[in-house]
Image (cartoon, rainbow, N blue to C red; front, side, top):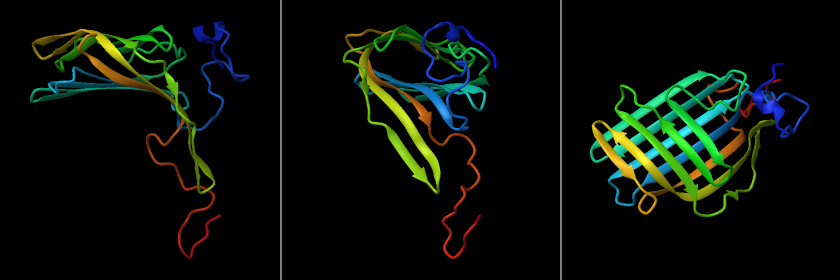
Amino acid sequence: MTLSPLDDYPVHQAPEVMRHVATSDRNFYDRYYFNCHDGTGELMLLVGLGQYPNLGVTDAFACVRHADIHRVVRASRELGDDRMDTRVGPFRVEVLEGLKRLRVVLEPTEHGLSFDLAWEGTIPATLEPRHFLRWQERVVFDSLRLAQTGRWSGHIRVGDVEIPVTPDRWQGTRDRSWGIRPVGEPEPPGIQVKNPGTFYW
């Protein structure tokens, strides 16, 4: 076991260091999702960042459509010991004030897309009902999600065009979800496989 800075906070939920989640299920994830637009249809930006502690991976993406341009930037790295470190290549997410204000950054790269955006919720974050699904004796989904609408400020750069983002025009939604859901490669069959006429032990 390895300690991380998060272990100094009184946030433990299981007799584990914070680097380890309470389940060994390979599909455990912890993710951010954001969208950003000005309501005109001229530009739509999607951003996501996720950690997969039992796979030892964190990744991020951004996808923008601006006029007739469509750009995607992706990054991935080894998760490491510190789950509070949300940097993934040129991406990072900073929690400025929990459930209210966040900062989402994509540093300039050769891909012609960058941004530095501050999110502020306009309604309280809402916790959705738990999602649970068992199939063939295996838990496939066991996750929670919060959702929130809000406004953006900062800037987005697409190619040579820098677009100012002001909260009077720019809005969007975000969610945070965590738990178990299928990710990556498919898992081997469960202890019972639904196959007419055949039973596997």
